[in-house]
Image (cartoon, rainbow, N blue to C red):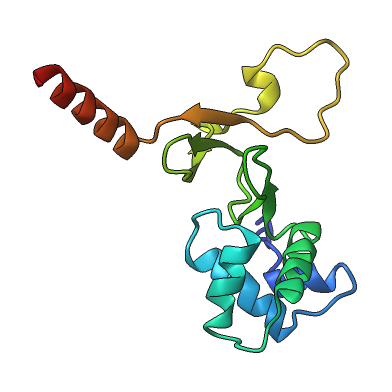
Length: 155
């Protein structure tokens, strides 16, 4: 007997599942997030969306981002050193914050391990949500720092 193919809900279906509709503004914000997966701030999303929808306000962009995260179409990435950023990657992953350039990168889990397979948690703990973040220098900034260090040693 064949199993039915699993159906992953479309963005429109996820929005409708929360009793809302995919407005033109929400679609534009969603498309901007999906188009360049670089963890933009709300202001960066606003700037990009204004190229498509010139009449959109920053408040509307904030509202759209809140709706998209509430409906499970994006995640908020909190960084205590700066404004919140938005991530369209819904797979389990960590984030890497470059302390030099400010870039944010996704760090995928190896072999799709669950947090409880990686971390030592007390017994009977129920994980409702987790965020893992790493900080340091991205490959480009690390190479630049290394080159500067070598140059200063020569002088």
